[in-house]
Image 1 (cartoon, rainbow, N blue to C red):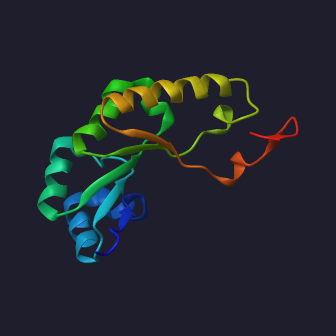
Image 2: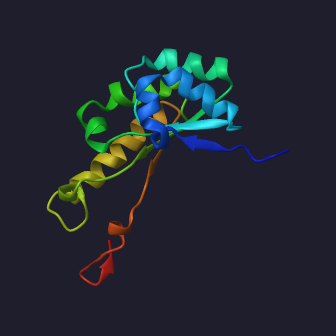
Length: 142
């Protein structure tokens, strides 16, 4: 059995914004088994779930902006639970939310809270790291 392969829809975001269904169909025709979302492109979560089922793609995960989740944790996370995502990732932190800035402890607290809410909806919270997270603060990696 071959290992299932998924693609991040962000890599074709312009096409997805223009026509999500057509883009998902093309992704499937290219041989992908699943997708990772990065936005809903103006579509209803239940409709996205239906599209994926009809096309034969598994909605594996989603990159969801941290501040969007903090602003409406239940509302935002429930959209991705409706789609059927198993994982939700914080894709990026703006500079003022990163280690070394005054509110990073609050960010960590919020991410833990978001992770608990996601878990209650059957999803696992992830963090997509970047090079700037590998900086030293007080001689230790952040």
